[in-house]
Length: 126
Image 1 (tube, one colour):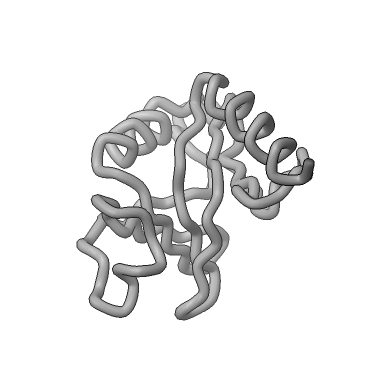
Image 2 (tube, rainbow, N blue to C red; image 1 turned 135 degrees about the horizontal axis):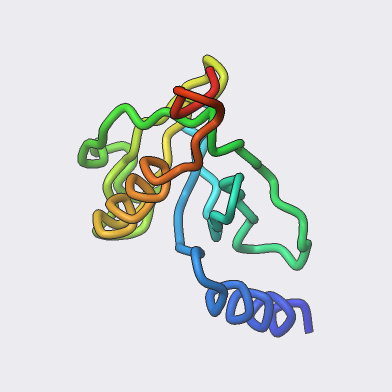
């Protein structure tokens, strides 16, 4: 029953525009497999193996900074999806690693760059 509910939840989440499979690491060596979604003002991560509709991590679009990407290190290869790149981002002075495929990284980068103007003469709030 629980596995069926997780499967239905995943299918419903993946049908939504702006969702993608990812893994997130907010502390060294710990990765959580997630479904990420971005909308008008936030990037959210929901645990893949859960039935909860609540995100485990939420980041305001205006405070996310992408710091590039790299290939997974040998120790990370078994903790992230095959074919993923590790995206390095900062959020309110915290360093966060997100594993996703390269095409998804391009979409996330475009979403961040296309963000709304935060105020007159400013692109983003700091």
